[in-house]
Length: 141
Image 1 (tube, rainbow, N blue to C red):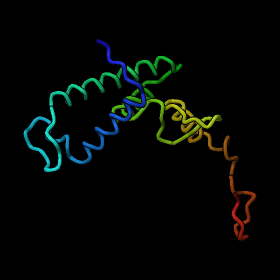
Image 2: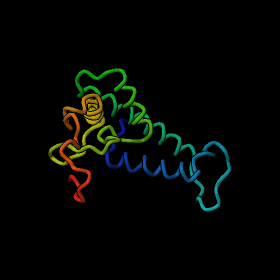
Image 3: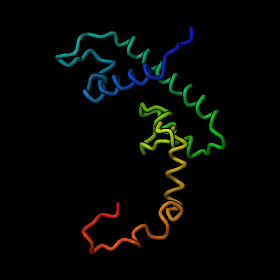
Image 4: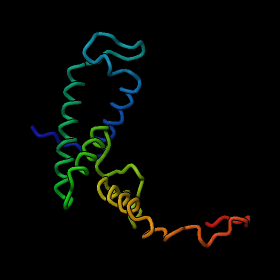
């Protein structure tokens, strides 16, 4: 039976697992040790859920990467690291948004960041502060 799960639900589950991990609730997944305030849980079910989530993450990466043209090995490696950390392919570390105000996907944002980093003069000119008199009290923006 194929597992159908919405992106929002998937990301909510990942956030909850990340929270549990940060609180130390998952470090003893294979032992009987429990923290005092955690209710007993079915470790087998939690393990199976984490395996299914990893499979879903991998499938999401495969589908997403098939829609991106000319993806490089470095971009694919960065994408896999990003997703393995529990993040969405439809999010980016720079919080860049497109012209519609929607957050950009990972590869598009990385490509734009790379373009800005490699060619700052295209975006800022030779020196963004050439027309600013630093002796004035007004800010340039």
